[in-house]
Amino acid sequence: MKPYLRLFNFSQKVDYRIEIFAGLTVAMTMIPESLSFAILGGFPPLAGLYAAFIMGLFTAIFGGRPGMVSGGAGATVVVLIALMKAHGIDYVFAAVVLAGLFQILTGLFKLGKFIRLVPQPVMFGFVNGLAIIIFMSQLEQFKIFDNGQYVWISGHSLWLMLSLVLLTISIVIFLPKLTRVVPSSLVAILAVFAIVFFFGIDTKLVKNIASVSGGFPPFHIPSVPFTIETLQIVFPYALIMAGVGLTEGLLTLNLVDEITGTKGSGNRECIAQGGANILNGFFSGMGGCPMIAQTLVNLSAGARSRLSGIIAALTILLIILFGAPIIEQLPMAALVGVMVMVAIGTFEWMSFRVINKMPLSDIFIGISVAAITVYLHNLALAVLIGVILSALVFAWESAKRISVKKYAGIDGVMHYEVMGPLFFGSVTNFTEKFDISSDPENIIIDFKHSRVTDMSAIDALNKLTERYLIANKNLHLIHLSEDCKRLLNDADEIIEVNILEDPTYLIAVDNVKKY
View (cartoon, rainbow, N blue to C red):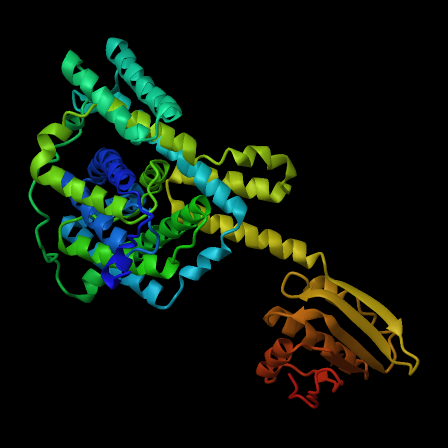
């Protein structure tokens, strides 16, 4: 394969028809969402569309996962709302550029691998919470702006829109049973558009949200002072935006890996996100990250290569330049119906089937992550809290596994055989196992089935040694693994222990400096 074709991941196995139709479908669903997010953040509507085009094109070409779709996502917009209100759009562009630099550094230092630390219950909670958010966000389309405020539509307008939404959902569900020549979601959008257009039905259209016409994204250096004060203003927003974007992006990448049975590159995706956000900051885009809803639309349409993402991005650009009058006539009911089906497909229904087989702690963690995702709309915070809860549960369970077997040797030496990890959570149980007053003059602690893992464990050994010294007794450690011995040797300035020479490890450390 030629090098430039390998970059785009084109091969003979790519079904160009499916990829093109999938890209068109993604573009149709991304436009109203990008507009809505831009309006939500107080940005110019075109800033959302520019973000969809720039993020979509750059990450489709250079990203770490064919099939993923990026754009102006709500997760990153929420972070920038306060900055927009306080300092204006140019500070937002500066923050987006800085966030891009952070993301590139994350990829260059290969920190994307830390997504492996996200446990499955957290993934369940994240995906289910996101599905609920996608569904709930569609309810906003049942409101109209009237007398300075948004009010729910009612009466004939409500029933008409509900009927069109249900028609869209029906086409998406039943058309694949007849044919898969074209994506059912694209057919649904076009069918509902045709019905509304030819019968002159009065319903909410894309143009009721905002205008989508404009020019090519203009180059613009953010008009902010290059001072420490400016850095202090934009730095926290940029850091949070980078973290949110990377978290959502790497979780989406993991999800696509599971769906397609292939492996993406997290570090490459970090670098691609960063580059796309830097371009956003200099070309009037509000920035963004991978969009899980549009990614699932893309995958459900059968797309598996980079081509669909490129088609989607170029379609958005063509619509901005030439196709706005047509796209503005699309019924919002059709787009709502497609997104409702995406929400249903996103939800991990399997989590209900396995819930009675999961530990109570995992159930609690999954529900907590979903609740935080729904109520705070902060995906990064929800995942972070989920990981922390999982780590605490793991530490607690591991702490309960520490045990000590005590027996007297034929030479009059008292042996303590430790089983389980010795760390901050288990040191209390560990120290309670020793009977200093009744032990003989020499004591050996055997770590053949244990590990000394952290500073709390070192401190516990040091205090135990001191207590035996006060009682004029000698404490020795044997069968320490190499990593444990390195840990103790690194701490020899603050701990006094004796590591006996043994035939397995062949290392002896005696007369360590006193604490």
